[in-house]
Length: 67
Image (tube, rainbow, N blue to C red):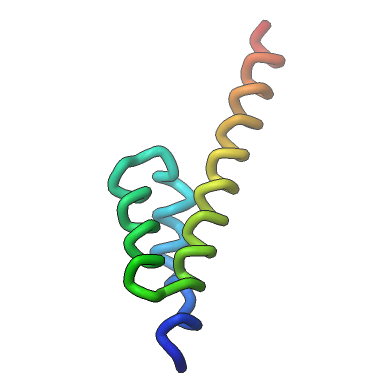
C-alpha cells in the first residue's frame, strides 16, 4: 500500500472526533499532509468537522431544551 493511501486507525479517528478543538490535533493533521499521507490528512479533517458539528448540534439542542 502506498504511503498516501494509508487510512487512519480507529483510535485516531476517535481522537479527531473527540478532540477536534485542540492545537495538538490540528498540528498532527497538517503534519500528515506535509509527510505525504494525503488520505490520513483528509480523514483527520473529516472527523474533526464531524466532531465540531456534533458539538454544535448538542449545544443547540441543550439550549433549546433548557430555555
